[in-house]
Length: 378
Image 1 (cartoon, rainbow, N blue to C red):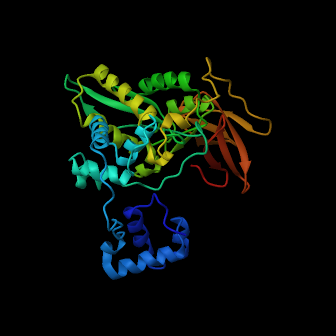
Image 2: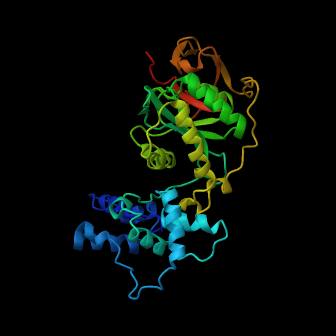
């Protein structure tokens, strides 16, 4: 089985690094990287013979140059590139094909033309390497949410871009210029997004404020509100931003397309640029991970509407129900257990699990804690 098309030099290096560890299981590593053992041992042998240079692909440049692209076509390609300076040959070709144009060369030829015309920096293009990623099967199964790093505004103050991205389609549901990263700000923007697109099944975010405090305190009042809406929550591994790889990649594109190209004056100015760019990102910019479709081609709103009122908290028979006190604790079997201040004054449910004396604690449909009567809690 050949190495997957989206695999890159970085994946080969990661494979080699793990394969050289003492006691490494090469067969298991090949399964994890979705390659055959033959391929794995080939790259391992090349590395041992030539070091890191041995991991590069041999040149595939044809011996004879193809027929030169007409000047008029080259001019159109340059024009699109100048309008969208970060688009590759893949995206430019796919975008023009969507308009019905058929007289286009291969994407590799387009890239060569753009390099010859001084529209692509060869060194800069090396930074744009694809990563192997996984995606959900349908829209609204998972939304990724994060704040991009804040930046200074020329009129004073800072902008904190909030991004909400559908995992399946890469559709950018929200790009909001925020003055801060508080509960109230995110709550207001999410309410607007939910009213427009409906509710996702699950949301993925990091462990930062306002949707998390730290690894040991993953739930906040904002998270409790989302759970009440029937949304399951997942938090990325601390110090592993690749868990939210699609959102991280989106942030890089936003930086290159917008933030690196003009100084933004204030939040209103920022939002106007964000709105224009979001329209291009969703409806015009072809996406390699979508086989050069645009995100809008694969996205459809959720059938789950945003409710006017939060639904009541109900649990099925068989659960043991306790109310969380103001300190985030519950009393059970004459003992006190901490389940989180985010759920204060709310009922939670306990469900016995194996081994005997262990219980899973649920808030609505979300498992939020695990307690054991077999362990001294004092």
